[in-house]
Image (tube, rainbow, N blue to C red; front, side, top):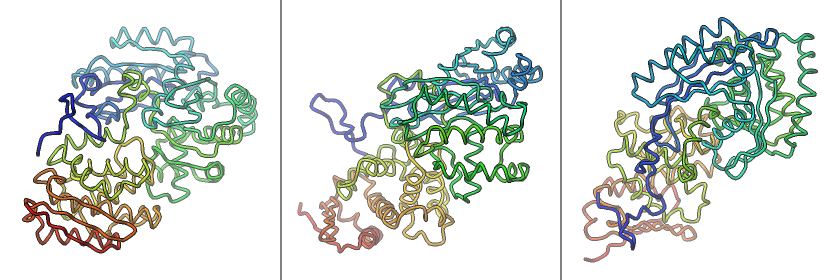
Length: 517
């Protein structure tokens, strides 16, 4: 592969892609970070690894300890929960030492901060394990959760709602900043045991929710849901709707869908529902109470859209350590570039491929152009898969990968484009129900993008733009390939077939122009 062009100052010209984030020492310092989250219901270790702006989960383990169970009645942490939490933290410390990562960052939320024996438990953890536990207040918990949402959605605008076992936090996000925030005692563990059944819980929630609305306002078009109980409800919503893509991050619901799902939960056998959705029994036990909180949240704030975020306080802690220059990067592009660097046959070729096919797509909107960039970066990262299944592996990776910064339809678009990078036809693939979520135009655009990459990859021996030029005239429905003399031998039988297949998807006629030496 040829070297990068130089700018006037002699620096590498990275063009539209910008300098790779993982070449920056400031970003590489964040490449592996361990976080322990001691919540009211669970204790979890997450070790982040990869491109700092869009980290991969190198390790993720959760223990359902129930520290906050009975806190409302006793004012103290659950004794059995303390034993389980201490055991889990001992294990997490050993794991971190074995991985050779820097000291763990550990936070505790509502249960530890509210319990009479919370300070003593914190001291016990430090004495027994050496881990210093940072006990954060409700507003700080809200801020960190909102930062986690910003890690995955840099353009997020609306109200972040994070539900834990013993509390529920709200925070406003807009223009990459966290604004007003507030905490409330609306965690399902704290609501357990209230007298009066569902009506008693409803009557208890209503005045608290009213106060939250007066504090935060109700002019938020979008609510971002953070927390295990919300994700469990979203998974049930998928089951009720027979939704084909079981990726919770960026899953979206309407207010009506939430209402229908809450009715579905009330009328369902919870054991059967737990088995169908793969939800733990401990989590499922809290779902009926959490669903009542969600029902009143939606009725009070009237959002137009409800989005589920898999990113929360743990990702917010990582975001906290990022310099602003890192925060401003596109999480999708950074994740794809890291994947290319790690797995592609020719790292860096995605940028050259993009330059070759870009003239076909210049009139597209920014959101579609960033998907085209992402596809070019990922176009060859699954080359190790068996050739008979490579196209399907591409699709599966794109739709189910841990990627931030794209919604479900964009995941499917990206997956379909990558499928067509390796395969002309999508017939007899097992993804028909997912592909049907796209419009006819989106399906056609993904096919064209995939076949453009499939054709451009035939010039991988060099920078494709040094060998040929691809031009599309949409009004005339004409696809023109201009070949330099040194590229003539590359334009063989298979290359010609791929060029014609691309033209067929466009419904265009072709012309090949031969430059003289």
